[in-house]
Length: 319
Image (tube, rainbow, N blue to C red; front, side, top):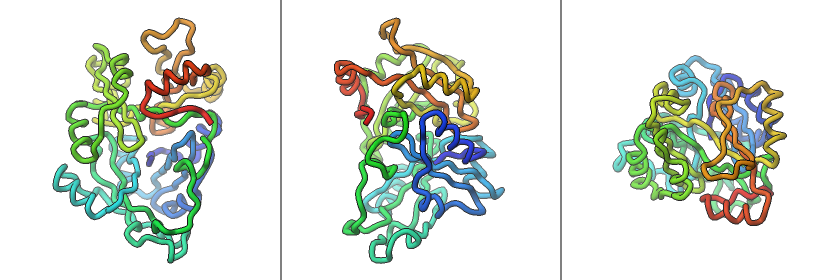
């Protein structure tokens, strides 16, 4: 997940202090780190955050910071055939590459293991349609390469820090139906978590949850002309508003946010939740992290876990 931030090291340090996030994949980050941008890969839960601090006053990273400010620029996925994927996206969706980046995988892998078609990363110009760009490539290594598999993209076999698997990428969006139709047509995206969406829907905002591979995108279409989703939509158009994790102890996490002097946007409980149930918090971290942080407490009982497991698209049990 490529995130444009004003200071990559400070973004990492904040997540480390809050969730015990770790710097990871330094060899891969070094392929991009240089005169154009400072790049740090950070693992939290099951997600790799690629913090990008623009240095040169040119290029797509700098342009994003100048026009939209800090924020999630792209999500990266592997595809089976990059040439066919690019052709389909242009023919069926009118989408062309915003930029391409060639990576020197030979600095990491042996020449025998490298997939020559996996050298180029295509950043597709999808921000206006889905709220982020898509960075697509084939795998950098051949299928038969003897490279150890890990459970998560972070390179670890367990979740990193005090965080669940990522529950949602939550976006502000002008037209949920139009966005879903686009994603469904090109990628077979489906509507998921219908029960959860029905609970969240209100006169304030229309909600849908859709999947893109194993990622859940929560699209929020503001109805009321107020609130942080509406304000962000007015500023940037379709855009990522927040990321969502569960933590082991919400009280301890809330104390850490207070120590870091992070302001709170709001505190709430899900509609229908018991009055004494732990709240979830939306924290104002967009300027520092490139997204707001939403976090709550993971269920601790077997019954609570089974309910949530069936309620959500992904299994977010903490390892």
